Length: 102
Image (tube, rainbow, N blue to C red; front, side, top):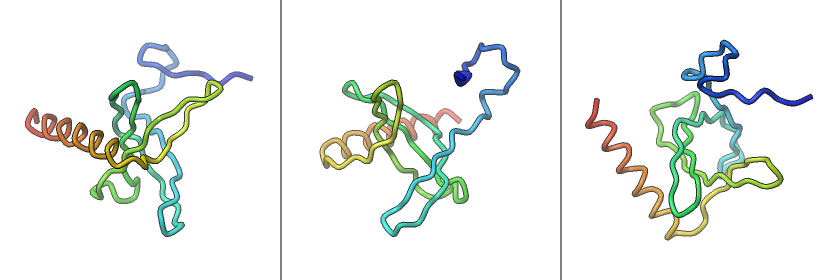
């Protein structure tokens, strides 16, 4: 059985603008949190996802790199300091630009 891939014009009748992509993420203390993907962006041939805590949307977001293997996507923590600095600067610029546009 294949899974239906949703898109903006797939015609399935779902409202895709409000569909949440929820992930269970374990933090450094071993606590599981429901995280919602709120934004994705690209940098240097990688795709990154910004996730917010579903139960605490005012908390700071977390950025993960999205990697693909065998047609499956998964989230990977960013360990490299230079990569982390680069993607947080990009996201801060995106967030600043969006808040100015409101």
